[in-house]
Image (cartoon, rainbow, N blue to C red; front, top):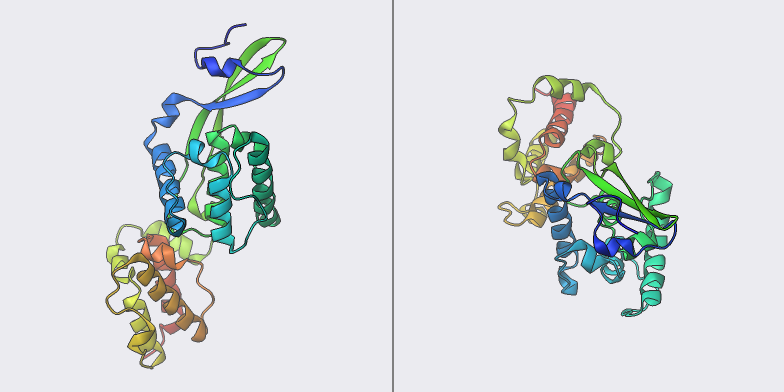
Length: 289
């Protein structure tokens, strides 16, 4: 028995009959966008779990046993899973993973997510499956991060048939566009406007901390906004998100529809999200004298 191609590593010859294993092609791992995706997701997990004193350094090694995934889901969903805290045996780890993934599926299935992971693939340290899971969680829980768009990897699929290994290459899409992943498929007049004038709009940086948005709503609606309701000189990311979220509340009180953008998008200097908020303000208040 010998590997079907040079992409197959020695440890991957230990397969049962008809068993399949997936590996990311080394050239894909060197892709800057892939590296950025992994980095963003690791930093996000560590930010979420900072109070748990959990530090993730390598996704495959740190997530496969279900311990970190359990803590991550509990923190994101505000729930408590009925699982053993520490499990050393493979059976115990898989049981924990089963419970965690069932809870994940209960959240994601109603929204039409394709479940591109299994207990065996996560426990088998399949990085593609782990990334699919983390991207789905980040999007579902509207994580305050910017996932790099259009990240794909070449995957080597190895299967054992009749005692021999056979390999093939497939392309695995990990992310699409932010709007598609967030489920914003509809286009409106603003999309057309943005398509034709994306280069003159760096002014959005002035609104990123939310201060101008809050003060602007006070001016447009003719009231004074008490200074204790927002941070006049925000220093942290969370303080800026608070300001923008508060401005969105004022917009709702003023009769505007719920903004499509997230506060985190505005704080992260997302051009289109910020301009969409300003455009909605303009269309409502343009006739004020």
